[in-house]
Image (cartoon, rainbow, N blue to C red; front, side):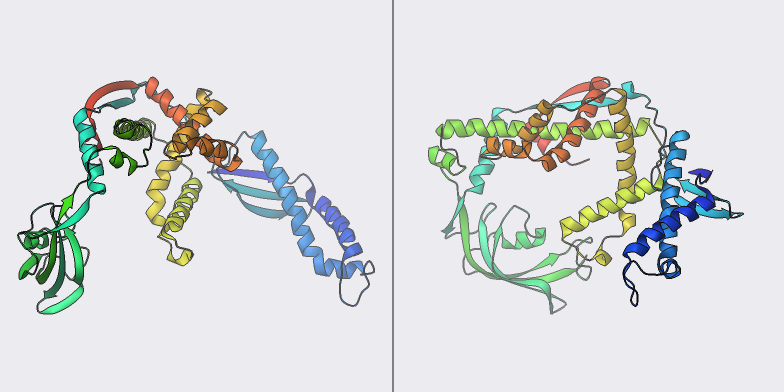
Length: 422
């Protein structure tokens, strides 16, 4: 927190002279009932506008004096000042400006940043697994006259009761349930295995202790079900027609398999990029603790709150999530921002059009008309204004990785992409 104590150069008499001059200009155009324009007596003009004009003049002088004082003392305010003025003997004005200053950031231990870089191996088995998932997406269902088993879809009516009373959400009509996919509670799915069309049965279902409905958490309910039909999954043939289902019209099945492998590569590369970014950011924060201005933290928290409101479709600010919810994330973002700006500044990292275009091409890669989208984005200043900070941040991360300690780790596509979030 910094304080500036200064006297206004214009002085009390100067403020009075400037105010009088502006009041004369106001008097020439003021429209006051009972007087013709330009004929309003100075006393009336002063009564009506004197206070407002004097405050405007004083405010301008204060701002000019404050700006000059900040430059002279080589301070970098983090936010606007709180200004308290004093009238000293009617000849001069003095004021105290209180404000937070940006912290001095001195980067340390950048060469000690450790990064484990996943070297993702995409094997034929990984591609086969992906194809199996894609076939399952395009599967159809065929009614069968047998008992249900894992992988089947059963169509049932159900009615649940707790202590003999129905409860909200405990009823359903002709509900499809795919067995083995965890759509329903384990006890419920268990009760649906081995049934066939026309079967009716009753079984108990235990709700987990952390169930979202508190009145059901940890309790057992009785469910009765009626089976309409049992269906088995019918997978499409792996041929050119299957490729066309995914809009691959050139190259047939061979072209489709190539596209699948390339998409898996892009997907894993993006995850690797995000993982490395997270490792670098965490290390940068851990090695460089700094105090941040509370004003910046509050400003960032308000920004996060507003972003959340937009995502949730909340327009009434009274319904917004509490600001305190965002304070920890805001502190981290502000600290990272200050540290990354220092990395960028110290190493003179700059963005050029080629790097921006490369980032835009990555963003548009999944579009069918990617070339057109790239040109549209590149010609939109608002889009570029959002992309450029992302590019320069990536430059900083790349620099930190190059100057840190990197260890490559081979891992299969399946293990890497299915790894639980840390």
